[in-house]
Image (tube, rainbow over all chains, first blue to last red; front, side, top):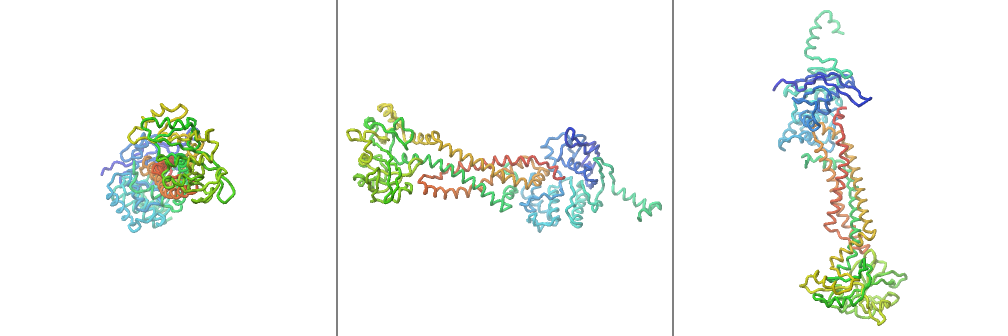
Length: 251
Length: 386
């Protein structure tokens, strides 16, 4: 698999509203995400991170700048073409948005219905992903009969069942307790490592920052820091050995 | 585009909430019944007007030009019938007399208008089939047959009973079956000789029935009725028309449909039922869509096209139409039977009428679906992340 960036953003600006009420929410965004990378976007609410996530997900029209996803330039695409791009992305939402009328199995299968697979192929994939997520015994339960952790795993299954190369997640652990949340991020981490899936994650949950390869911090529509976690970790370890910082470390 | 998905999302959404499903079925069922009642009454009216015509064994009918409906025919000279009989191909002519008279309820006070039909009971042709059985009795003085389909307020009538008609004593010789229409609530049938006794004002100065209300012509089996019709038109004066049974039927239906407000009222009633149905279906679909907006937005986010989403909603609308329609037909069958018994009108649940209401029901569900689906198309998938 090539190491070409899955997401490449150059000088993206974004505005909401029109006329007098027009308000810029994103300024000069530059960002690249490579296969197998987990990028966590943090920042106060209103900083524009969710807007950026929806732009990457082809859910909004690019107004200015260049935004390439999975090798396609999104700027200037028509609605229909954007819908086509969405099919190759896995979305994990904060609210589960599962159909109450459908079983876990059917909800996950909805993620496959827009793809041209044979019926048995669909069945195999849905069963495999639900089994991998530990839901084999709850496959035919409806969302109301599932715990919140199980429901979130169904959402993850729906996002991954078509094996996307890019997964976008918005607060995937917000509705979950510590263990269930950890379970979900471990799963994403595993996916990134084994399948080289790029994952962009918006979160306020500090408990899961450790899975990130990079942490992008946004404030007021700008990226103010883009830190490689491994490097900064190494740097911290190095600095901690310096006498000047050793006391800080203890504090 | 059809079906949109292999997972029957539309069906599962519709049936998931059983209480809501029950309410939806009742809503659509009500609409279906309302339309069936309007269509039923409209056709009962129109069918009721031609019941008499259908019972007459005749090929051509002579009517006064002023006659607009068989329910109140204008009389014309009996001589025209003899002229028609002279035309090649006409094997028999028969006058039919029709008048309204006061019927006094047997053993009770109170009187009601009733239609009196009269024919020559000795004529071999052009009669009601029932006449064969009571042919003999009808020839006696002051006797008549009573229509068992007459409204109940004429009293319980049995053969042998005596009552009063047009202030003369009448004996019921037997029963026959005709049915009511929107003008007449009951019928009796008698011989032309008795008719002249009960309606002396219809007699000419020589004491004969000179004017007939409906002229019936029977043709030879091998002749072309349209050719004979043209020939008869040539010999009779211009103040009468000569029509085939089909033409009379069409004229009769057209009269009640267009020349009276009754046809219009029931067409309007059907249209009102349709509009109410659209509103009910819209409300059901809209509620369901509103409750699932985040789910529909999610489908958009994972790559469902507008076309696929429209298909899901329209499928749901179609299923809604069907789950309301099927019990609707069953209930209509029962109601038509009850109404026919109560009114004496012919309520027929024909395949065409079932098809018409089915089409209307599907159409109204589609209109509602197309209106409601706009809500789905307007949702912004980006908002799912908000």
